[in-house]
Structures are given as structure tokens and as C-alpha cells.
Image (cartoon, rainbow, N blue to C red; front, side, top):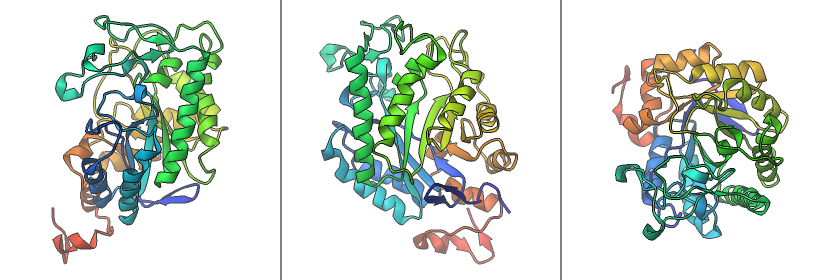
Length: 361
């Protein structure tokens, strides 16, 4: 019996396996609107056998986009296409999830294939916001604007409204993006947050913004549907957010109704030193799971079936999330099932690709 292909109940939904497609920005939207690229990209991975497909970082406001080509959910007009996407995913016996995000000081950049450089105001870029007016990179023209109390309240309200729209659009999982150096992570990290009010300084103050966002989201999100939080387990930089703080945060979130901590890392500062290697973030997921009692998800350079199977089988995480490996192979779960000798349902349209005595790849 494969652990990777065992079911997992999260509140009212039952995942058919432990394979999750991680949010991956496509930089292919216009004014926040999804299009057929997003339908095919996300739909293909549902056809490929993953249990949960989490849509890319979807901005809760125009100024919260990483790039002008990011998806958004700040308008009711965005909902129509999302309904088509979520309906297709569910028709493939998978669940649609959405990652709600605000990029903070890392907003207003070009797409990766255009260099991921900061847009100038003359290029229709915009002034970014952050907990403190600290540049991410020294070559940026302007520091971000420090959010005042009204600005903080607006962001929280934007997350609340986005959660309401996500529910109407048919998503079954919401993930709050508190990782990778984006706005919520900027509040968490002492390297980005130098405030002296109730949102800065102590650990309790630095997590306040996230807790208030969670509370706002939960006021719109049903209690019987799962809520994930993605964190950067460590900044990989001296004096930054660290694993001990991640564990303590997870302990606090356990009592707020959060179901899963999606454990990534890094992104807060440009001088980070990340020891990249196969499964390098799995120990963070393991610590969070065992020391907080919350379910955790592991992500990052997990590329083969045995590696993923061992993570679940050894109790290092409860879910395994795939990003770049899924870009390389949308049918990754079907391939993993074949390699682990697990019988899974194929889309009926593809069944003729299965041999009578086994599956062929």
C-alpha cells in the first residue's frame, strides 16, 4: 500500500492522494483576468491525477500583483473565468485551491523572461508598499511606502473580500501566501520589518498582521473547507525569520482553524544563502508537523516517486507539493503511480494508453 496514494480528509473534503500542485505564477493574465492558458495549465494537472491543484498567487488588489500579468481577484468580474476553471478541475476528481497574495515591496516587476526587473512609474509600474520603507534591492529607484494603519486595514479588507469571491468562484481550498518575501512575510521577518508600533518588534507583534488576515478570511470562508498558510520556514539569513519562529507560529495557528502549513523558505532578502539540494525544505515541514501538531506540506526539489513516497511514509509531511517537476510533466501523479505499482483511475479518454498487463509510459 502506497502512503503517497493514500487518502487524506481535510474537513469536508477527501483528497484521493497526497500529491498537490503548488502555486506557480504564469505571468499570462491581463488586468488580473484568467484566460484559456490558465484553464489548460491548471486543468492539465487535474487530468494528470493530482488531488489538489492550487492556483498561482492571485492578487487581492492591483497593487498586490508581482507583475502586471499576475492573476487577480479584486473584482467580481474576475469570477466568471475562475468558475470555468474550478468546474473543470472538479470534473477530473480533483479539488481546486487558490493562493491569495499581496506582493508588498516585491511588486511591480516584469515577468521572469523579461528579467524580473522593477518597473519604473513611466513603464506603468507603481509604488510598492511594505511594513517599513526598506528596498529589497539597492538598485531600486524608490523605497516602498510604509503602510500606515489605514493601509494595513485596507489590505486585511482586501483579503477578506478575496476569500468571499474565491468561495463564489468554486474554490475548495484557500491558501494564504505568507512566504517568499511577499507582504505578509515582510511583516514576519525582522529583516524587512523595523516598525515600532504593534505590528513590529516582538514576535507577537510581527505575526499580528497574519493573524488579523486569517481572522478576516475566516469570516468569509466556510468552517468546513480547508485553510492553508504557506510560510517561509527560514529566511536563510542572519537575524531573519527562522525555523524556531516558524514552529511557534504553527503552534499559534493550530488554534485558529488553519489546517495545513505549506512549508517553503527564503525570499525575504536578496543576500540570502540557500543550501539548495534535493528535498532541502523537508526538514522544515517535519519540524512543523511534529512540534506543532498541525499537518504540513513539503515542497522544493522533490522530483521522483520514491522520494515523495518516503516523505509521507516516514511521517515527515502529510502532503507533497510539486512545482517545476509538474511543469516538466503534467501527468506526474500517473507516472508516480506506475512507478510505485499503484492502480489508480485514469481519465477514460486516456485509458487506451494503459496496457492490459500494466501501464506504459
